[in-house]
Image (cartoon, rainbow, N blue to C red; front, side):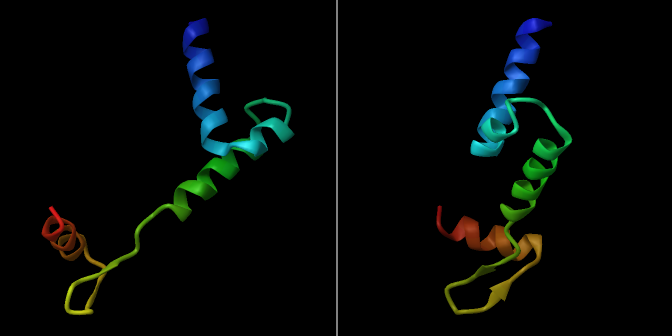
Length: 69
């Protein structure tokens, strides 16, 4: 159980970076909200294909990604 708590703290420390230290290393509501905000920022809304068309649907993005493999 203790090892699980240590792993969870390590995860959050990596996820929120310096904000973790500023909050005193606690799993606060603030830290969870910052982590959620970062997760939203990392979402890909769309990609541009080779012909210059912007694709936002899952199939279009998948096709573009597959073309680079």
